[in-house]
Length: 156
Length: 472
Image 1: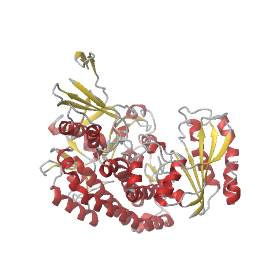
Image 2: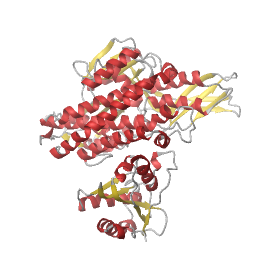
Image 3: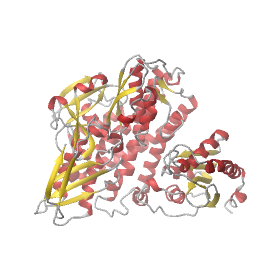
Image 4: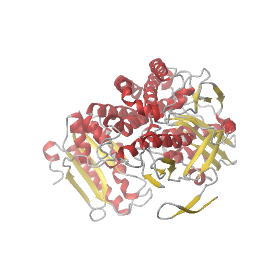
């Protein structure tokens, strides 16, 4: 069991879509501790369900099309059955459901998103997305340092 | 005349379409296997520095980027005319065996297990990995855990799970830390246990698939794969061998740089995928198969004890040369056992911790060929460069491409057996898709140009009658 699992996911070759991946990579360089696992991934995969089942809490980081570009939002992840036929479309909720169904434990989890501006092919993020990175990193540090009670208020 | 189209073919890597022509009685009159994507790597890499090729060609695929990294780096090693340090060779081989494990696990547990465990005629809405998770959680856990084992090793060695930049011309980017080695060794027993119980399960279930074994690509072809000097299976290094359908070695110990003497490439009008063939027998007679079944047919042995026990049992049951494409699934599981044994042997070799892991040099040859056994078959990267090291020409023959002709024939065979045009069912069409899945094709990887693009345009009326046709 480890304290926190942070999964930043997205495609770094699709401009702002990769912000979760970039933030996770940056955070993993800044913070290294046996008690914390940080994953930067192109997509969510079933293997992450096993890691999630061993975490006390999980934070997903991703870009979103919704909202004003650059705006940051954090909300709890509600459980949901995997709805898609395709493992390419696993959601944070379905990863957690798999953690419960296959490994017997579903930790509290949160989804931290930033609204992207550009999702076209490209390896550079928009200025708006880049400007949101400090706020995202602050959220990650808060998540890491929060106790269980305050962690439950992250999405509020 | 009626045409059935299966599009897309599901649970494969890449994009493919199958068309089945039926006669007026509803019998199969013809089939075509279409790969519907063009990548262009051989063209747009012209002008790039040769040392960029590993990083560029890794982007061909998200499942098997390590194969391209290795083949590209071997081609670059040849251009540099270097012999990489022994530790670097061992580390490349370690990563390669790891990739074999996780790629074969993906194929068996995620892509094909839905058919094998839930039934090929089962409800397509649940005939997927999520259906396997729901109905066979223990098997699903094993598949996830085996894949996780492989991916964690990749990350431990190369710092990245997808498109790692650790494999470089001249060797690898960094030595292996003892702590990482010890961690992998600690996880190995469970991975081996998963492989053992999975192959035991599959062997026990084979009687349920007698019909599939009899008609899934069950026709004689040649087989090809890399072997060492003693004829044992070689995944990273080795020379190419061709074995006939009846078991004779047709050609042996073909060095990478000599592949063009033996392998020709043809363009097909119905597909963007090239069709390699064995040159002495011409096209299309020179059909051969690669990949797990091809390798085990070509080699005399695996060269590791547990895998060789499995291989002997495999041959006792199905023959010295095994032709049924359904048994690619079995061969894939034997190779997982073999790769895990290789991982253990490599990690127990003290030389793998040596810190000399990269040779450096400039351009010392204007041509280089790298050849390895990717999970899906023999992979060849062939580059020509100018004096400044810029790519002037590149040719990639990618694993699944070698199997193109055989896949097409397999589709025909399965269609003729299962398709009844008077009463079509989804399960019939899934059988046709399932034979493609048995080859575990990586179509995005394999579709490259040979310098020409065969094109055929057919004009048909509303009833499917051909009105006109032009072709180049």
